[in-house]
Image (cartoon, rainbow, N blue to C red; front, top):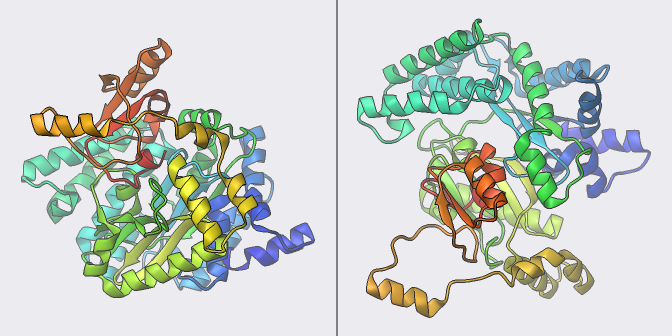
Length: 468
């Protein structure tokens, strides 16, 4: 359990673990959840299945002996903490199942949200929240994610049906779809699942949980995860932890939302809160780049008290970890919940500035600052940039065709390619390519890594595509 992880690890190791040891065993996400919980920050009740369990699973294809029984015991503890019961049609507990390696691998492995939903618990969720539309929205999201991640039935099939429904109803945003439309969509999704697999969508929450844990373990060896590890020289035998976390909902209305933020600008290193927030949304909407969010500073206007509380939390976390932090959070009906903190990815220029600034601020020593700037980041500083004068001339002459949100500095030129596999193939042939997508999915990663640049139609600067 996150609330007693330090105590349990101390018993196992025979000494109090430092952060590095925690990350090895609990993964970065699990270690972050445990430390935030210990610090008294608002974290939903959760527990972590260790990386060791994943390593054993990779060898045998089965859960290690005793692991499933420990999962069931931990679920009971969450039930006691929350006052809810997993699978209970009256007051159901819903959870997320999330990956978390010791080194940050944004979007490379899998997550399943809203797990525990079926027809009965969906109806209960509607009654308990007083929001029937939300219950169907949560259900259609769960069916999509479970089908895609656990069963390998691409989410594109489901997104196409959602897009067709929006066009039919004449609306632009998911949140504008009617209640009747959502009901029809859920029924259609379940029928699609049955036609594909010859059986009904699974309704037993414990079966859903078992399959989701296996899927997250399996995602460690997924194509995009392997490509990312090879690119970043991360060992393949580490395995991932699995975090089971009580669901909190950002899609309950205008007083709810979700966001991702960095304690400093990851592109420039400037000391300012940098990030994005989406009203009435779940976390996947931000990190997957499905919708374009508003800047985190705008949260101050929408929810001033939440913004001030969040700023305080971010400052505490940066002081504690002595490094720039990348955080995910959810606001559920006016209450802030912290879902993740980890050392933030940054550009080479930002790495240098942050290291120097933190020395001046007394957070780290000069020796630590030097060690934090990697040789490959120094190489990045030499990458090409657009000539400012040429860019100005292009603007004046009307030759500058478009502008957008830049995720990182630098410049790239190449042939526009609209398919990730094709981008990878052409890059291997020595062609310079720019990958162009409506929004990127994790499966696009090999093509992204092979491209000189990535251009997306949707999404913000904190989506997984931008961070990678």
